[in-house]
Length: 273
Length: 327
Image (tube, rainbow over all chains, first blue to last red; front, side, top):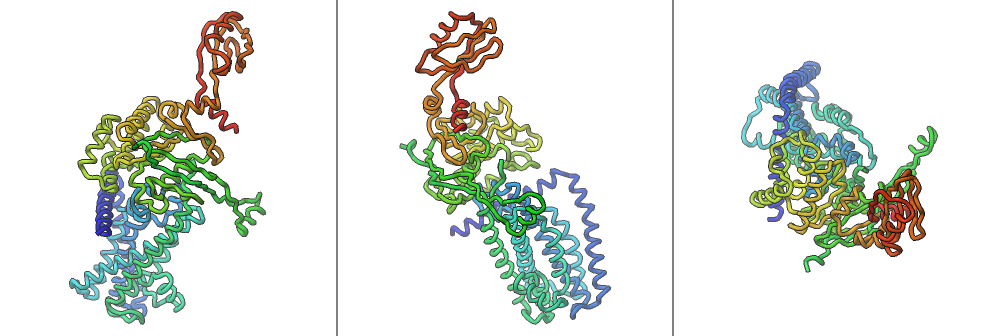
C-alpha cells in the first residue's frame, strides 16, 4: 500500500515535470523553429546512413535489408527515449562541480529520479522521428505483423533497452564523484552505442560479443531481442525470452547504476562559496 | 512546553575535505599523476549544539569558517565524516527523504525557481513534489501574500524578476510545504534596503505565526541584530561562542564607543577610557560600561575642549566578531 502510494507520487510528479518540459518549449518559440528545421535534417541523415549501410553490405551475418532497417530503427528509437529521459548522465561532471545536487538533496524524493526527471530533455523527440520512419520502413519491408502481442513485445523491449542505455550513462557519469572533473561522456557513449546497437553484434569477434552480452549488456539493447522477435538465430535466446531478458537487464543495469550513483553521492562536496 | 522541544541535535560532527597534493612545476604535476597524494583538510571539527523549537539562530564566522558546510550537513546536502545530526529525532543521513519533508532551505546565491517559466509554475511543481493539497496550498499562499505580496508576482516569468522579487519568490517556495525548520544560507546577499527589510519581516512573522525554527548564516550584522535570539560563532570549524547576543556582547566586548566632534583638532585624553581614533576634529573614545558613564565622560571632556557634536556607538556584533575571529 505504501509502495503504491509512493508510485503514484512519482507518477504525479513525472506528469508535472513533463508539463513543465513542454511549457519551456512554448516559452521560447525560436527554439521550436530550430526544432522544426532540425527535424527533417536529422531524418535525412539517419535515413542516408541506413541506406548506405544496407546498400553496401546487402546482408550481414544472415540479416537482410529489411531486418537491418528494423534493428536500426528500433535502436534509434530507444536512443531517442534515452535522450529524452537520461541524457543528463552525459553531463554529470558539470552537475557535480556546480553543486547542482544541493537542491535535489533537500527534496523528499529519490535523487536519481530528480536528476533525470526534473530536467526532461523534450527536444530528444527530434531523434524519435528518423527512428520511427526507418523502423516503419523496415516493418513494411519484412512484412512485420502488428499483432497485440508483437506491439507489447516491442514496448517491453523499448523500456528495457532505454533503461540499459540510461544505466550505462549513469554509471559513466557517476565516476565524476570520484574524479571531480567535468568530462562530457556524450561523444564516447554515442559512438559506443551507435557501433554496437545499429548493426548485429554477431559481426564482431567473439570476445567482444561476450563483453557486450554479459559485462556491459549493450547486446540486449537491440541485437538479442530483435533477432528473437524476427526469428534470427543468435545462439542465446530466442523469441519472447530475449525481450524479457532485455527488460530484466535494463532494470538490473539501472539498479546497479543507481547504487553506484548513491555511493558517489556520499562523496558529493557541493560547491564552495 | 512546546518551546522546550529540541528540533535539531548536532552531535560531534566533523567534516573533512580531501585535497589533492600538487607539487610544483611539471615535475610535481607528473608526480601527482602517479601518486595522487591527498591531504585531509578539516572544515568542521567536533561541533555539537542543540536548537529548540521556535528559535531564530544566527550563524556567523569569517569566510571558510565552516558555516556553509555546517548548514549543508544539517539540511542533508553533505555527509558528515563523523558524528550525527538529528532533526525531530531522526537521523538526516539515514532518513533523508522523511526528514527533508519538514525542512525548507534557501540559498541566497542559488534559486530553486524555474528561470524560464512564470513563478506559479515552479510553485505548482513543488505542490506535487511535497504532495500539498490544493486547499492548504491556497491557504499558505494567502498568508505569504499578506507578508510579502507574492500574488502579484505569480504570473511573472522568473527571468524578468528583479533580485528582490526573486528572493521573495524563493522564500515562499521554501515555505509552501510548511516546514518546521527553515535554513537560510546568506539570504540577504546582494539585496537592497527594502528587500532586506521585506526578508527580515518575513523571517520574524513566520517565526511568530508559524513557530518556524530558523537557522541563518549571514555577513550582514543587521540581520543578526534584528532577528536572532541566539548567536553561534564558528571559526576554523570550531564553535567559538554560543549564546544570546547581548550576553555575548557584555561578556566579550563590554564597552561602548563615544564619538566626539570638536571645534578644533585638539582632542584631550581621559584616564578612564582609551582614545582609539583621532583624525582632524573627530575622536573616538572606547570606555568600559562599568568604568564610567557616557554622560560623565562627555561632561569631563567638554571641560577640556569645546565639543560640537557627540554620538555613542554600542559595542555590537562587529566588536564581537573582531574579538572572536581574532582568537
